[in-house]
Length: 505
Ligand code: NAD
Image 1 (cartoon, protein in one colour):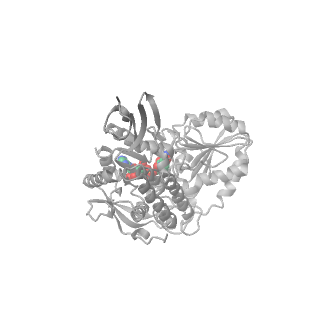
Image 2 (tube, protein in one colour):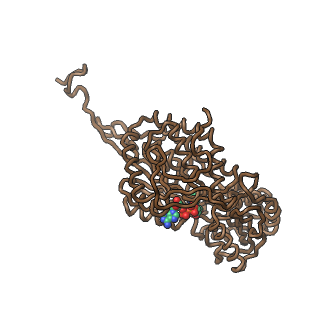
Image 3 (cartoon, protein in one colour):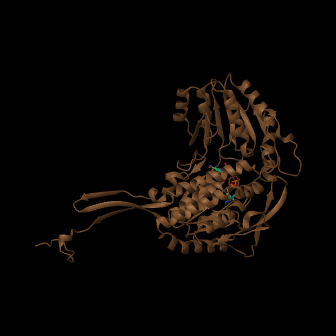
């Protein structure tokens, strides 16, 4: 399939909503600025949806639902296969849009698109995934079977850190199940999803099945309380996730709200320290630490800390911070406000008594980008804000403990339970950890468990509100309702119209 030559390949001045298969050209009363974080310059302005705009989008999605829900499974998979091809062929363009507004380096942005694409591939199997159950003859002449049906228009509210992948955790499955969708992406990097919307249309998705409204709290609140919205899939920080869960469920909606994280990497004394140090660098500083699966705390079970820190320091010295389009290893932070917030945690850590081993505030990069270099703390304690709170930047902290039990207790006592990793050569220790740790996703000798489309993704504790994780079979369940049918068809011999069967005498 040829590369798509669609409108949203380059930077744009004004980014507006995508409703009913087209960009709206309404005048918006409120808007937000979009930056290129590597230059610090404004690259666009994004219209913020009012309650009326959200209402219009929901109306369009409701109308489209009446037809889309009856589209055959063959038709749905044909659209998804075509979309998968367009995504594949155009993934560099999507990655470029992500880097231009998020700042992550191009290879990271490409990785994000690939992860999203895998969910599309999973959703292509929807005919199999939607197969129901059947029990014949539960009573004489009576059969029982189950089917799963779509919900209606569903809302997806996504964070800035994965502007393409996080919406793709949800909408391919939602659409495959027969729902219609409204995405409210982050206002910080809204362009990638607009290009995805064009690709969906080019793949043959009927207008109105996939819609995008941009905005902030007003748009989110309108979606959360709109009677036409049947479910909400949210990903973002924990306070907003909790608010979205409470408000959405109070309005009678099905809600899955994935929140923040503080991921611990436990290093046992027998671990391979080169492998561990490489993993700490990748998981701590990849995407400038702006990942919900970033490692932010290394729990060093003594006597491992000194040797490990030396290896981490050596590797940190080689990380090139700079423009993600110019071959850097680590890009800028997403906005100046966020950069300053992360830097303020470094100041707080010093004040609270942690040992600042590498200070990323000293990084030198040309230009006015939102720079903060890789930062390393040692000797942090559980009372410090840099331990208790999610920093969401390139700040890695080492906490020293004396035993496996102490390490486990730390992880289990933390308010977040998104991801964790253990590094050890002892299979028995790793097996105990996977069993005992109160965290939703566990890596064993891997830096961080990446999302796998056919498994479900989600954390525990304050990292997720609601019962369903994202994608995989839980995604199919979330976007459908079960129905059980008990049926009795009288035997043809009963004496109905003559179908050529022997009649009752
Ligand atoms: P955020 O909570 O600020 O924003 C998320 C979404 O909520 C955005 O669309 C935003 O416009 C909207 N929003 C912001 N403030 C709101 C308010 N007061 N009322 C209603 N809606 C509001 O999160 P972010 O800064 O965009 O993303 C980073 C956060 O997302 C981190 O905490 C990270 O851990 C989390 N995250 C979690 C996962 C996961 O799988 N658990 C994945 C990615 C990101």
